[in-house]
Length: 420
Image (tube, rainbow, N blue to C red):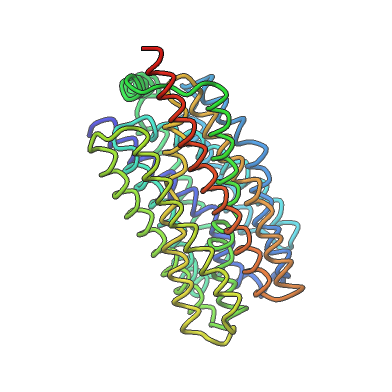
């Protein structure tokens, strides 16, 4: 197996584990409620705590990855082991405080993956395809977690679900440590590709890079609340808002997140075919930004529709939720590939990826608590209105990036022609 395929395989396994760790708690909230009663706000806080730690740590992890490339692999597999330790703590929890302490451990463990793994993937051939595969692996982990967790919870209880998943994480962590390719060889190989990819393209100046990267961070931050709340609260929403049974809620959550995983892979494949045809950087970026424009525009309309539809309209709501997942997750793997085009060889990619993920995590940390609080105080309609408003804001930022990118590249081309 060549190095690129080996990297994407094990990076995808790592992403799969990361999402299982992240979404095991929301999948089991409706089951642990019998032992540890929680309000919607408390449920939201359990989703916010690990995200707050990600805000504090993601940029630091990205900086460490740029400064010490040999550490990247080891930080990733150590994080997978940390997710396993989190599962063990959750299995012994008896109060909201115990659950909160365990999610602190989860936050440290989750922070090691995205800035580092995204760096490996975005400095390879077929980056769109590989980002799509990687994103699907994470979404697939999110999708199957409610279903597998449901089986564990029904037959052996929710504590055994946490313990069983934690043992799986520990096994994968040690396997990753042994099998993932040698860091120095990998870093040299990927660096050679990065130099080759950008050698014929006019690099962005420091000021232009700063403007474009900040806009991408803002877009990422505006998309994160929708991503986090759809992934985190789907099982709870179907149980408490739409009054499905526990089993129905788990199965429907798996279906909806599975549709999202398919959409992510589909768009990654489409974008990759566009990229490998030898088109220029500007055309690649424009196609990707149009894709994410479609993704966010449709998601905003569907979220507003969820506010309007009566909660008793079970079948229409189910279809709206499925389409919401499909369209929103079309854009799940696009922003890192756009950032990799903007970064080029002259800027630290791991640091840039860390900043992108920090922006997303900052708003993603607050969103579950806001969503839960609104559901407690005003009903789930208010929660969906909150997400729809954020999605509309994100749409405006995407359009702004499109116009700014066009203006910057046009000016760059003119200056480059004059210099020649």
